Image (cartoon, rainbow, N blue to C red):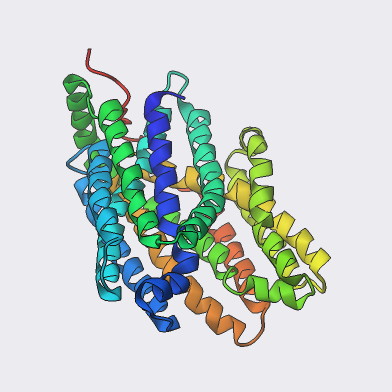
Length: 400
């Protein structure tokens, strides 16, 4: 893996960890820092941050039509460094919320590291869809590993005698990655940049006209996939505990799909070579079957079987969904952020739907997830033809 890829995958990892590390511990954090123990304070904080993130993402996408992705990532890192430092010094809950919303705005730029990372794989001499799939598999691995790392980081911050130090420490990582981004990606050959921009300008209008339907389809598949994965999470441990798993068993069952997903990643490329475009609907069907198995499970051992089957579909499905999305959006940035904005909006509905469903039955959110996964399967069966993609931008070339 070249230096550009290492830097970009590090930015992706930071984005995932920074986004989720403190979320499970917010009630305790607000209690320690500001003496606030009302659940509503955490809910209000999360909603404000999510809505701000939803508004900021398309703005960064528009900026990507004018500036290279790595420059926007660098700007996001620099902004986050300043705001993370200030966040640890926030004197009140209101100030903490306002600064967190500003951090979400700058962190949204780090999402552009995703298409930049895939563009680096497109620019490899081997190139092709196999190279792109290798990049997507790396992102999926980082996604699952960051879940564990984020939990450990959040718990570590809360365990400090002064959590403010841990919060501000994120600024150090921001600065370090900003320096590496500038040194490795910040100096591109002017001629190559001009050629790439000219190529992009020549194909942008055609691409947007021809891929409008495909972008909508990609967004719908992404929304259905993300919604179904997240709607089953909030009350899962309660459901598992009801089946006799115990608190420790519930925690193990919660992470079991991630373990299964990581286990199947090494064979995803071989499966894609054998199945081609049929991989996505097949993976979604397997995941839906695993979810239905869980919803109907009479005991925790049966639930474990459903979790493993779901994890297999999840691991393959994540790669297949992201491959589908990048086929539709390319790696320039604006189209990618449009799809990701729709997916983020879908995530807002997941906890609301879960709360409504669980009022009838603890297993109902999982059954809803299975139904929505089947909907995503139906959407993935029809693959619209894609236009010739715009030239991929590469950020690894140094000025000679």
